[in-house]
Image (cartoon, rainbow, N blue to C red; front, side, top):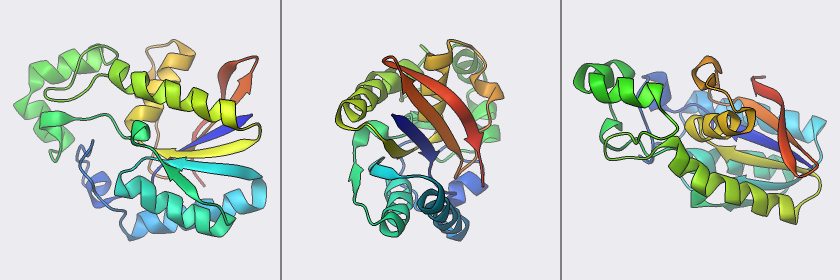
Length: 195
C-alpha cells in the first residue's frame, strides 16, 4: 500500500507567512493552480483508489480539484486538520516570535510535547492522525491520497523517522510525501517534493 500525503495548495496566509492552524482559509489562485497540476500528475502517474482530506476549506478545495480529475469522491475527516496554533493563528512568524519569544522557543525545542498557547502539541496531532492512517490502511491495498497540512505531515514524519530533524524538512504548499506500508510499518520513500 502507498499513501501520498499531500500538503494543500497555497493560501493567502501561506503567502504572508501567517500561522493558519484551524482558521479556515481558502486556496488562493496559486493554490488552485497547484491542485490542478497535482491532479494531472496523479491521473497520469498513479492509480489512486481513494482520496481523504482535512475538513478545512483549503484541504477540501485541493481534494475537490483532484477528485474531479480522477473521477473519485474525497472523504473529509477532521482528524487530518492542521495543528491548532491557538493564540498564534493569524499572526506572522515574526509577530509570534516578538509577542511570544519564550513560548516559541519552548515549543520549537520540544514540539512533540509542548502545546502552542491555546493550541495543540504534535503529540495531540499524532493522537488523531495515526489512528486515521491505520484505518485507511485497513480499508485499502493500493494508492491513497491524503490531503492535509504541513504541521500534521511533519509530525507524522518525525514520528516515523524518530528524529528531531522536523524543522530541516521543507514541505511547501502542494508538496507530496510518499509513504509505503511494509510489514505493518509506514516507510517514507519520498519527502516534500513539488511538481
